[in-house]
Length: 414
Image 1 (cartoon, rainbow, N blue to C red):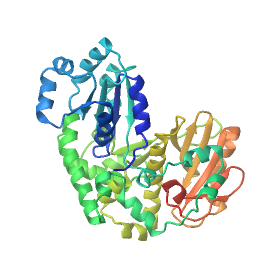
Image 2: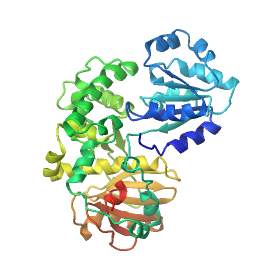
Image 3: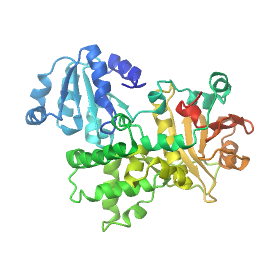
Image 4: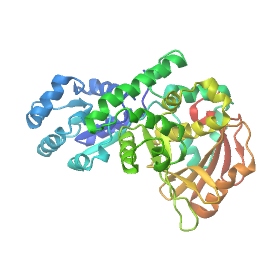
């Protein structure tokens, strides 16, 4: 079993909050984490994948909640939205911390009537597929180094390595525990295909009434091919005989199931001609590769696609690491109409850091063009700019500008 660095956050939340919800895509490890902590703290476990429990909860929500012990795990809560008001009423009578530990495979924040019912009573922890640092059992410090503009510690502690074709293998494997456990790429791809089929037949119908279910896998595959690119709904709608509003509705559903994600554009009054379109990212690069039917060898030979998927890989790794970072972080991208861009902008309070992603083993000053623009516009609020590349050396490229091997972020060091 891999360590989940969100465990500390979960235990802290249960000490001072009546309801804690772990949400994230199905099979990312929510139930395992909840049961690991719950077994230690004396929680009873109930899953709404059990049809008897599901039907009982739907038939009498208030009675069901009142019958529960003082500490309980309710797994896959999105299948019983009727329980949220009953949980609210129960908590209002007894606000003891750690009363309910919930897990959900759909984002209740996109269902305002559910999220609002537990406002002020519930803490939400998003669990993503495994980070590379969790797989390697190494606590990451990349974000701390970025915001301190100090990579000297990394040089003293480890020797970065060039990953080469291993990088393509890591990207194709993804972060879902059950997929990683399979011993070859063919078996992992089969797991991802079964995962999508089961999710669409099960979770989709729990939260939405969709007539054309067969379109969703095709739409998700198309979204995979557009990962790390600007989110343009009309382009995604083009292959289908559906209206743009319907396609947007389907995309929102995929987002609600934690399969796709939008990275919003960063704005500044000091910069003009900025692109205001969000970027699209798949939730997991292993899933993206399976949807596009590519393996690590194919990916390694297609450098353009490798760069595209590496950007999504880095973005998702940083989002995972942000989950247990000491400070709250917000993520954006930046691009202007002259195509000057920064792949990922990270905001920590008044500080901004930029991350540009390259799949090559070399780096040049012109690779810092977007980061220079960001630094110029942010002034004293600019923490650092990093070009992540597949090299073996941490190199300074000016004041608070660094070229940093991808391996320092993934734990792939000597």
